[in-house]
Image 1 (cartoon, rainbow, N blue to C red):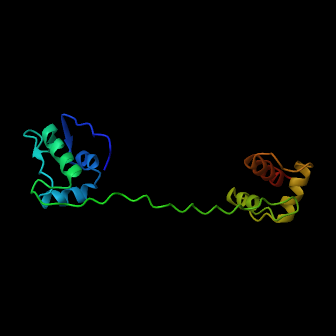
Image 2: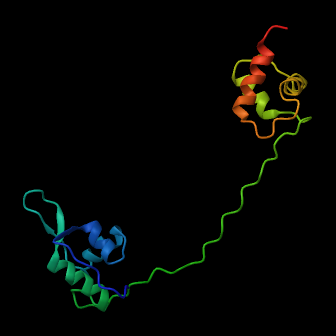
Image 3: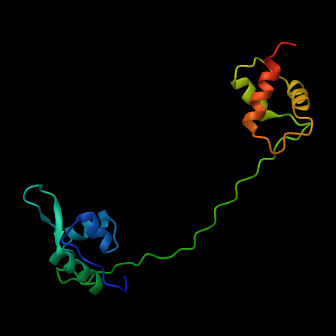
Length: 154
């Protein structure tokens, strides 16, 4: 388990006790049912299960010695350190070029209520508004200005 002793508290919940011995709550309850770990005591007023310091020490001793309170040996599997495969890199979507289709802008313009903008109209608006290109300009600002340019009366 661990080389360092686990500090105990005055009272801990069952979930905390399971965490202290390095098990899931479900597995811990299973081992309590088998008599490996001592059952919790119940708080008189709240009726919540808990472990006072003495029972915490007994549970930690069971884990350390691999011998349950029912005097039966028990094997605890150490969590293996499986190598985690790196996540695949997200594919990079190329940004539309100056003579491209401007699909993002077309989708944005349609979402703003523009009836049927064409790629040629959007390209012409971008050339008129941004003669040096849209590199380094916020895409929201480009969308706003192209929308206003196409909406204004000629």
